[in-house]
Image 1 (spheres, rainbow, N blue to C red):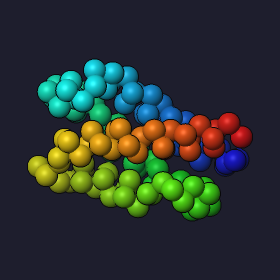
Image 2: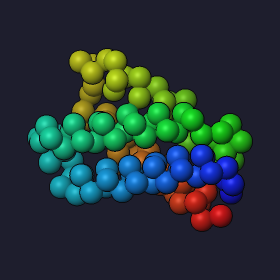
Image 3: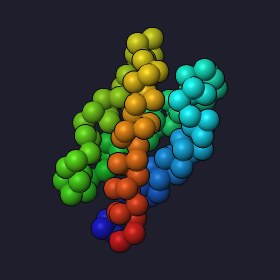
Length: 112
């Protein structure tokens, strides 16, 4: 639905980030919680993806009110600035619960 080339580029970046997060977490919850390299990769992708999400237009965000846009960007701030406070169990919940919802929204937007 988005025709703006910059917004489509952001959507493609978000799509690519989700694909990488899916790849990094193929080992499941146990692997994520026990492998620091996987944690680092996922956290970095979530951080940069959230930054791209924050730059999406209000119009696009309004089309998808089920996505907690503000909380997504809020996580970016935690990942970037409050890294001592990151709860890896909560990060895994984000990967399981929110990334699939976001993926469906991005796929929908890119399909039009």
